[in-house]
Image: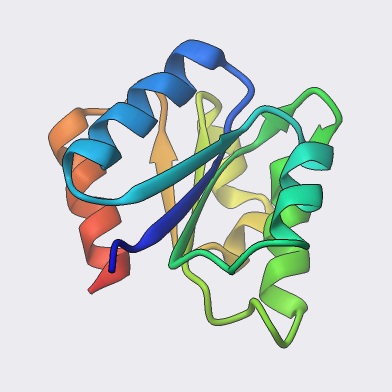
Length: 120
């Protein structure tokens, strides 16, 4: 069975690239452009093996989603990778709950290594 990965990314091009890269690696990928659409889907579908979250989203901050998932009993064990073009977010208190931080733009090989490390 393929491992599920949820990607919360509002830039359509980046979301498509991530979905393509991860699908090519054998993962099942669902991409969401808003926190609202992500929450609606996540509340009615099986939990993912990994969550990848952009920080700056049109309807909120991805770091808040990270904190919510890491404090909820049902989702706290799911690894989360946070992405941002702004390196300052790496040191945000809410980012400390994440299992990793990916700086944009990212190196594809390094990105895939980070994903595999979280899923092993």
